[in-house]
Length: 170
Image (cartoon, rainbow, N blue to C red; front, top):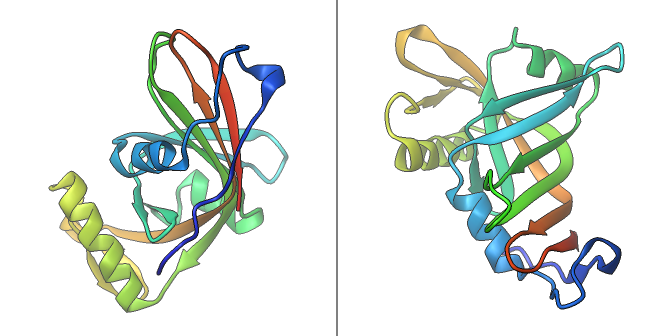
């Protein structure tokens, strides 16, 4: 699937005077190559829940998996809107990326297998899954639900000599 690159909008009120918008290619590269992401969901009582996880970027969306009884799966069953972040834990360099979207369960076997293949290629063991019956099956009998987050809005926070905030709308 070919996804049109979104236009980058610099948010000048949160950027250095000499800042320019970060190119979408740089944000996409960060989303493809990051190893750790942070998922923010909302509990049924309205309190936030944040947890680290591994994820993959494929065809314009982020994919992650979780057990059906884990807090993030319970939260997403109640409210599917979420935020996924990744970046660099320093102020002197890098681009932090914040993805806003809706987490939708993936059940299609062909798409699950493509996602499983990307997980295996990116992370290796223990993130090698078999796609079967609408879920991931891992070592030891573990079963995981798979979610797709297609971005609705993405923010990029550039750091270094000049700080920038870029917004991409999809």
